[in-house]
Amino acid sequence: MTEENNFTPFERIIRELGVVKWIFKSQSMEASTNVSQVPMLHSKGRYLAGMYYVTSSEKMMLLQEYIKHYTKRFESTTNTSLVKNELLEIHKEANSILNYYNKNLTTSSKIVQDFKKNIPKIIGDKLRYLEKHRGVIVVGNLRIEHIEFGIDFHDKRMDWTYQKHNTITTNNELAFFCAKLIGFIDKFEINQSATKKESQKIKLSIKQVALKYIYEGKSITRQNSNSIIKEYGHTSGDKLYNEYTRYSSKTNRIANEETEQKLKNKIKLIESVISLLSIENQEKPRKEITDLKAKLIID
Figure 1 (cartoon, one colour):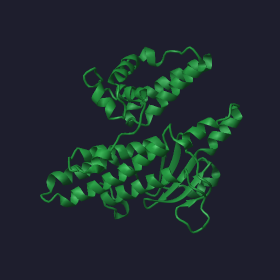
Figure 2: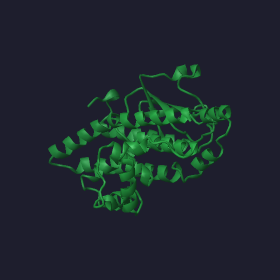
Figure 3: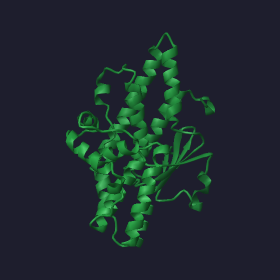
Figure 4: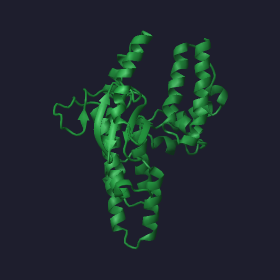
């Protein structure tokens, strides 16, 4: 695999997890007071709603390359101790970050509830409010150098940050990166400690789980619904199966709703699932969102 700056895959993953940790925690931190502080928080942290920008000197989050690397190493070496130790360290760090995300950056957390509670009703005020909850994260050598809240990547004031690799991401997408690493490592069955017991998937609603499986082309049946939903912290396989059955129909997914608010809620629901999907599985939900938004405009 490509190794810019000669980082090993293990070093890359650990550094990238450090970037994710800083992005998550910075949203509740105070602005930096020391001009030499790294990373530099140029203003008080705030919840990063929706998409934000990460500009980096190197490619990041090369998940499939990491999976390929460790699979090959694990299968080809006669001494797996080093590989196991690396995987366990990655698992521990990714799990810690995912726990933080689930506790502090999901819909039940205070920072998210406060953000939603304070969204203005007037459209102009709302747009300005949402603008304040965007950000640009500047990464050099896989370490965060600067975090700019309340600004868009295309703002000319951010010209100084432009680097070789520029990515749009979300909190949910970064959490999903951690969850995928954990899931991959668990398959090796080397993690029999408490760390494995504590590992968890991203907290999703039952509707989100159902839609995720639909867009991925996976089946949910009465037989497997209980085991699937337990992985996401819920207990009712019947509810999951019912939502899966309802949303399996495209007609139901893109149908108009009784009220404008219900239609907006449906759009938000599908939007929330997109970042959980691979690029090749995102086209269908994006098209359906376009269809739903057209109904919103017509109404």
